[in-house]
Image (cartoon, rainbow, N blue to C red):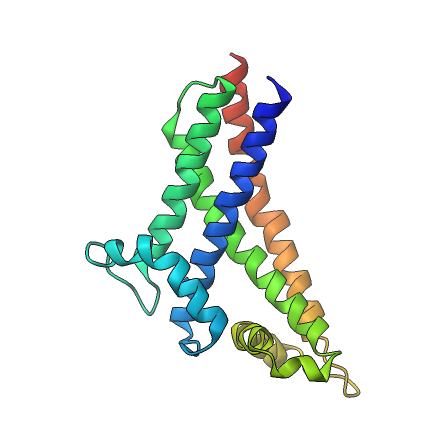
Length: 195
């Protein structure tokens, strides 16, 4: 396979994942009722509105989660992996690609929260940065998860270990729960390409 095709696939994967991260961020901002006047929240809403609004009429939400966004992320990931399978010459098997799309949805959620917790911990070292709208959104989005961990793991000697414990827990979930099926499914798609 020519290297420029692999480069195009990599670039497309980057763009698809960035847009899916925006959709997942919107999903959690809606769930936790983030400040709608935050400039970052408004940008995410503007960026994702063209695809989210039409799905709201046909896919209901559940317990504060927008079902349309969940379906959109899974479908976008499914279509990307179907396109990749076609480009690499694999037989178009929709079932592994659909499962990869669903697993990728959960991986995107874990990665988003790992990023939010890490950036929140990093921003805690710079008190002046707390007044920025991005820092406010990062704190707001990571606070429910950190609060849950803080209840389980109280601070010792005034040091808050909850960001480190949260990052470790999210990494373990990603590594032990989400990556094995993803590896197996991608290997199944690659084997179809070789046969």
